[in-house]
Image (cartoon, rainbow, N blue to C red; front, side, top):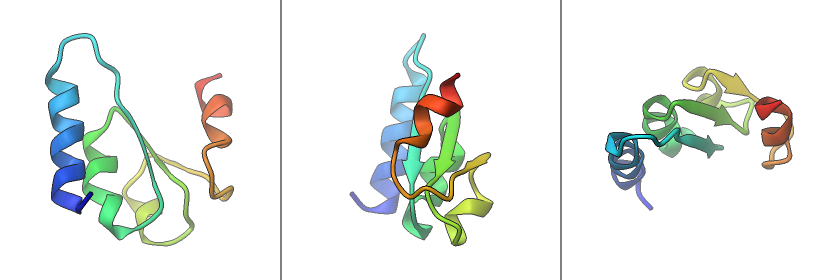
Length: 69
């Protein structure tokens, strides 16, 4: 997906009542979707990390359960 599509998808999912949206991303093309999500997790120490409220230096989704706890 391109950055516009990612952001649009997150916003559409956010618009549905009752959804809590999490987004994991690892690059600049994920920044807008990370910001649009309820929970944005950057899996990078690079540019996406400034946009996300949570940053993991483990570059895969194994950080998600820890965050949820």
